[in-house]
Image 1 (cartoon, helix red, strand yellow):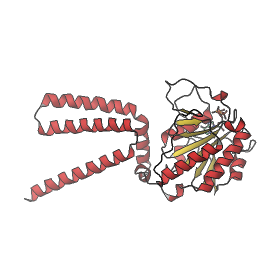
Image 2: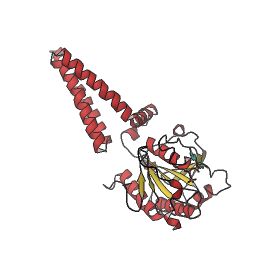
Image 3: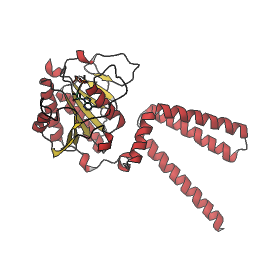
Image 4: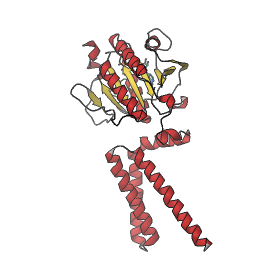
Length: 296
Ligand SMILES: Nc1ncnc2c1ncn2[C@@H]1O[C@H](COP(=O)(O)OP(=O)(O)OP(=O)(O)O)[C@@H](O)[C@H]1O
């Protein structure tokens, strides 16, 4: 009697944990195509388990196992970025990020994003190169960068940001890291994206690099050469944009990361802007030829 009770309890716990993992996985995947792939893969895994356990069909079972193995390898290649991020988050113990919880310290207020857009607009007009990383819940840590920069930990202000990117100052090279309403550090060296190397310069590759690794992090880039303003998110770059468009996008990101709005920031291709994914198959676009809308 006790034995059967134990077996049932184990089965119940097993089903409970598997369902919790399933719910967690499905709630973290937003892209429909990825969702279909995940569904198909989980279906195959369940089928392999069912055939192995309940049907005495050794050849069929071997074939399904081989299919599962082939799919696992394909998905490991297809999702190498996501799997790498998952292992990084697990390895550094960032479970809150993994579960999609945003802590208060990452919430920027409207005044900060307004000041940021204003500063970006002014930097763009003066053609001063700048790279600003906004951590909106990725909980970026020094080990996520090639060089963590110089700690600042100061209240965000347009003036401070303009000062940090003033040429001839020691901290103008590299990126400024902003968390919530504070400037955390400056002179940060970001990991570069391995995609689109022939298409972009290192400043833009750095913005793509950090945003393709961390989902809840966006980068504002001002090109020194053309003054073009860009916004990078999830390894995609929207450019050229005006400072008012930047403000709109930042507000959308803010509301979507705090969950107060249902709208998702959309870096979609539009007639006025080009949204570029890092797909090397895509036609090359010469970054240097685009003029900033601020300068037109
Ligand atoms: N990995 C990095 N992390 C942070 N900042 C970087 C990184 N690599 C380069 N930068 C910044 O970008 C500057 C060089 O920009 P570069 O001209 O190579 O790129 P770009 O994308 O063509 O930018 P721009 O349009 O401003 O010329 C460096 O001086 C430095 O400030």
